[in-house]
Length: 370
View 1 (cartoon, helix red, strand yellow):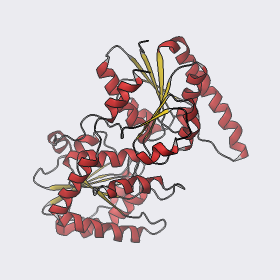
View 2 (cartoon, rainbow, N blue to C red):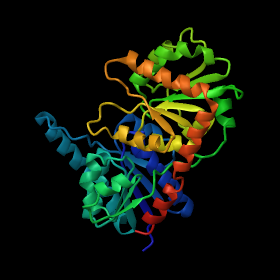
View 3 (tube, helix red, strand yellow):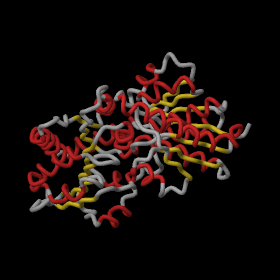
View 4 (cartoon, rainbow, N blue to C red):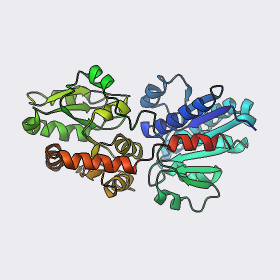
């Protein structure tokens, strides 16, 4: 049977939404008549990303699970409200639909509703360690798509077919189109560019560490410039940290066109979410990864380690409670890379060799056949 309705479910971070958008783009290219709908969380970042796409989307009142007794009842109440909303949308077209979960608490209502309605379910899991939602929902999936071989082993006890395809990325990664971003941000095309990013929501600790060392980059000012993406919440505070900094810099709160921005980058400093490291690699840019330090499973460290093994990145610890040490360690790695053209270029080439640019197309073809 030809499927005509594709429901993507997941949210809370860009890491759950951007892979879904990449697959949706490929489905739409293969069949322009399909209907594509997103179920996401009520977090502002979800609507901010999806509002620009033209796709129909529905923020769900679902929230992350908590063991606190006063929040457990609220969690189940919101889960059921979300389930009913999703079921209402899927039910009329159930026999023509596929549901694709991308992780996070916002994916649960749609995957559960699909299971009850006998709608095929696929799951996209790009982090090396599956999150709680994907671990619980894997039992309902016909196919699971992962970025790493290590992840496939963690789904070994499910009945689903597990396919190692890489991380689906939006179109444009791997290109060398720099002109648009250079003009938009007013960059000097004759200078090398250091890009700093805290991912879709920004990172206060990365912002603090980079602001603390920015003056020490003054010796590179003749040949380098910086683009620092602070996140919306920390923009004004981070911007104030660049007073009397002797290296050209552009401070922005958010930037959606990461394919073109990373095409301009010679070094990138950022988190090590699964999508982020895949983007660094596909862009062929030398990466300094500061994994988020608060995850109990340390999955960002494990993600980054894969790119380090490939020769495309180095890891700097984001030392909890010690911005000075983080800044000192980061400055050491930046000084090495910014001074060594050959090392930088080799790391970029290593990353691009490791990258898998066909993941979105492969997943789209598979889900259209469910």
